[in-house]
Amino acid sequence: MKKSRSQISRRSFLSKSAATSFGFAVMPAYLALGKEDSQGNKPPSQRVNLACVGSGGKGGGDIRSHCGRKDAEPVAFCDVDPGRGGFENWKKQYPKAQFFNDFRVMFDKMENDIDAVTVGTPDHIHFCAVMDGMRRGKHAFCQKPLTHKFNEAELLMKAEKKWNLVTQMGNQGHSSTASLQFKKMVETGVICDIIKIDAWKGPSLFFMNKAQREQYFQEVGRNKYPPADEKPAELSWDLWSGPCKLRPFSKRIHPFNWRAFYGYGTGMFGDWGAHIIDFAHDYLNMGLPSEMKVIKIVDPDKVLYPLSTQIQMSFPKRGDMPAIDMYWRDGENCQPEMSEKYWDKDKEDKANKPKLGGAGTLLHSKHGEYLVQRGSHGGGSRLYPYVKSKEFGDKMKGEAPKNGGCHQAFIQACMGNGKTLSPFSVAAPLSQTLVMGTVCQYLQADLEFDRKGKQFTNNNQANEMLYGFKPRKGYEEFYKKI
Image (tube, rainbow, N blue to C red; front, side, top):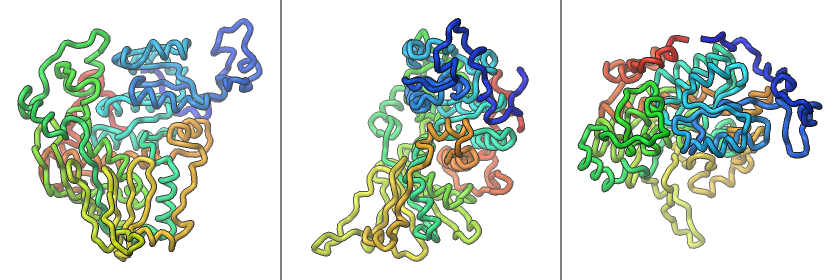
């Protein structure tokens, strides 16, 4: 392995020489003078060189968001499916960039040209691609959830601390005005003494559609991965599988429905939980649950996530914050019941049952005077009944983040300007909580957890699912202790 760059300063890329980076006989003014030109082009010494792992779909959207202000530019693209990854279009837009199918080859060949890596791939690849960049001293942006396994998140959190790198998870709402509003509401006491959280998400994807799910079981069978389909010529299925068991290619898995499978995704809890419970988890310092209880799991399977799920997670007292019971519900009719005393009233003083929507949280306080509702992503928070909001005035208002959304905040932090709001130190415990929920779903078992030792105390199989993952050959090195 090439020499690590982990000891390099966070801003060392600013000393890159434009003269050695480009072979122009007569250089454009923005290169020769080191100043931004009228089109917004910036010299190499003033921009972040990105390596982009996953360049289609969500990954492609991330790339465009990172480079929108031209403070960053892709120098390398990596995708196992070049057609879906949009290689031809990216080549037209960035003709000097290089293109790869294997992120390991990309880092080996271009390590000295890369400042930061962005990862927008299926969940099961996140860890390896991020870790390969971080161990070489690259700042890292990764889509949510951070990892597919509990221990992977633990290793990334340690890597962030050891190598002092800029990191950000792509749960974009955490870098929004709504996030800072929630934070302010906690700091000013609007949100206080929370003892219960209802969190919910309505059905989406085929595994939560009863008819489509039944069709899958009729054609494939229960507890079975789908049989082989003809693989697209451009797709590198071995690389797509990454550290996971190499199963036959199936169009039921790639390119979109991999989220439905335990082997690759994290189901609805991992996918949307990162957007729904993120504010509460961070600003209420919830950490990891000490207990998980199964309330209801509909149509469990060992390959597909359930049709619907209801689980309870208990978080112990933290300092002067009381213990919290969080109830996660997904699937049909997942919205919690709200006591009529919290309903808003119309002009005739008639109470109207609220429409809570397809995703969100309700926070219950010990005082019981009002409820706090938060939606998902960048949705703001409100009080029930709404009239209570008037009592708090400016305490309910948030400010826009100084460095913009999660993508631009990451780029600016790489340049030494400010910090990210969802670094791995924040995102890893959240992702671990979500992964613990998937273990509970799979085993359909009540679990007790030692938060300090970070292991289950009543179920060995659950611990194996957190730590017993054995990666395929060629990926073992990423799982070494930090």
